[in-house]
Image (cartoon, rainbow, N blue to C red; front, side, top):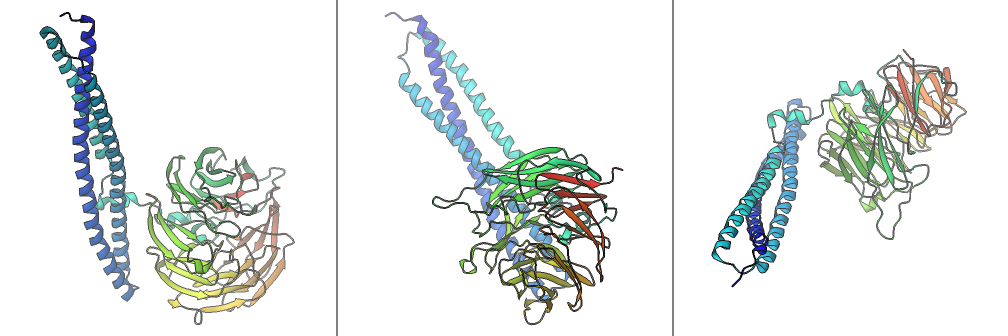
Length: 575
């Protein structure tokens, strides 16, 4: 019988590839088993550890309710809660990465088995003895290669697992933003600045400029997409958001030069079939103001899409909360508390039970806590501040003003005093919370209550009028509100008696700000009125930007950052 020597390499190659596929499938199978065991152990540890930590947290909650002024207990709870969330974040990350690795290993194993089965059917009948030796040598060569490939796959998977972040409870602070209340106070991290107090930490702010002639304008930069979000500033970065059609974007600008350093795209959620995204043109897709913790910046859009970026524009995570059921379009700005992004997600009608306050871990993008709210859709924003040594979140929505514990989301007190389409955010100063019932009145509430304080803690109400957009501002002895049509009125903080009222002859959307003893009031047409703060009205000056303004200003050392209809401005002295 003759044997075609030209078939020798082909037969040897086919046999070698067959054994290579078998070896690869075997290594992938072993890797899958080992990884499955690791993931199961991880899940078991998670269940056991979470149950134990949750029990300890629940026990501490009970103790804190009994001793609400015990700072040591509160601090112990915060540290344990941070440990719990850091551990959960690591284990969930390991499960997520491990799941993808396991899926990849199973796919490799199935492909290798399929290939081996195909080659086994096509293997030729053995030839003479001398050719079998050649085939065995070739098979051994290919088998060794297959084993090396399998070992490489196993090594790669093991390396990836080894590189996953480890839980280091002793170094948990490394995972927590370093920004303290004091550090926040030196920057402008959220809507209306630290604590939403709209108060500049610096008094070296210009009182005169002119946009058309560039007087006092350090730089001006076009913003790619429209939006009503106000600038937030940290160090050498200014952040804004914009949105139009199917584009949602976050922008990082150089604070010194105005250069657009990066653009972060965000995937836009689409409405369910048969529904459409109905947002008023005046609201737009990018009305909510962003927040930053000094390392990351987060933005939310009218579609309920939340995204987080680092300062170099790298997207860290995204979260689709669902398109809110909002009459005019969702517009609530974000707030920040330590490593938590606070989202006031009011929507629908109160009886729909859709509204909630959500705290998102800024590091992982995972929910830290969530609290139901008994209100319909609103456009107000939450503020985070400290009342009597306790960090709290204060919110407004028809009909309630509600204060929550910032660390846990537990309700502290509520007051029934609002109605209508609530948009102005609350303000806290000198022991009082100031809120506005649209078109109707300014209300002062003593902030030291618990439970339903409607009958006991409403200090006074000024029933002259009420802004529909602009938030109030206050100090130790006065409180001020500014209506959209231009009426400004100032009241005694002690009893609500009116100190003065003045018609500004302009309309306003930006909320008032305080720089030293001066109030900065920015009109829709870009005119900044500078007014003496206090018991008597005195106009100190006014400056023109030359562009419409719908957002509130941000104040830094010697600088004002203003978003116009199309441009971002920096106002200050050149030196």
